[in-house]
Length: 333
Ligand SMILES: [Zn+2]
Image 1 (tube, protein in one colour):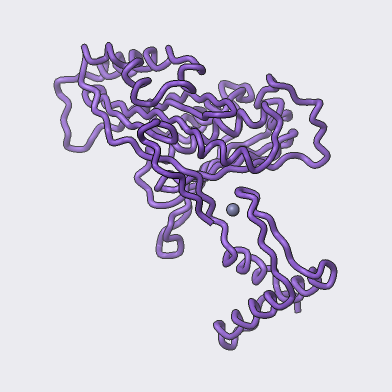
Image 2 (cartoon, rainbow, N blue to C red):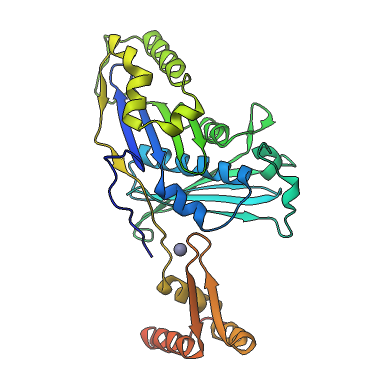
């Protein structure tokens, strides 16, 4: 299923603004999510502290995805042994986002308050991990998925925020030098990213020394770092960009790009659930049918319910066997 939000550039919500400090070779992005974030959190009730981290990760997903020249899905997973077992955000090349959380079974909500840190929630034993996967759209056609995994640790301590986790990932995996600021409330999830670009091949920058580039990078960091959480949530990306970097025009031109729309999009479908049942095997599916009269699954990301009764299952396996010719369906034999 795919829910496309209506275009909303005029209100500048669900918009990602990219800009470039050309002389300093630094890329910037500001994202502010409204209805896409509200759709994600409307699927299930989560304690406020957990929801805040998820929202920040959603904003990070859009920011990171927009930095990639990659046709596929960026998947961010934070995994640990606390009350939160897994936070997942997926963002495709068209900035279609979905996200979900897996909590520990038998959750005691009284253990969490507004200020419970990310470390307490997901990484109580310090063994939590952050994985980022690039899953190409045309996997199997010579394109492989890439995954990088780092501990949820920054400067020897468990990370306290999603922004720290993302920056620790970029640092550990020797990605481009990047700073990220994130913020989230019930209405909006917002973020800012600045990133040093690699020296462009063939594009000589003799007029700018590496000391100057470093000075520029530090100045742009300090300007970005003046942003408050409240400001990020309440201000349109283009206005915020002006506000943060207006004095930068004394040093260089800030190139801006056409804002991009971000939307909620789930990739689940009846066909995918059908494929899952085929992988489960005929015998297993029959035994579920015997117990429950039907096979029912709910998508963790969008809440869609898929139901297969005995007739649906028979059709599924018959069609599969016909298509597969002589190859029998997988299963327990
Ligand atoms: Zn779904």
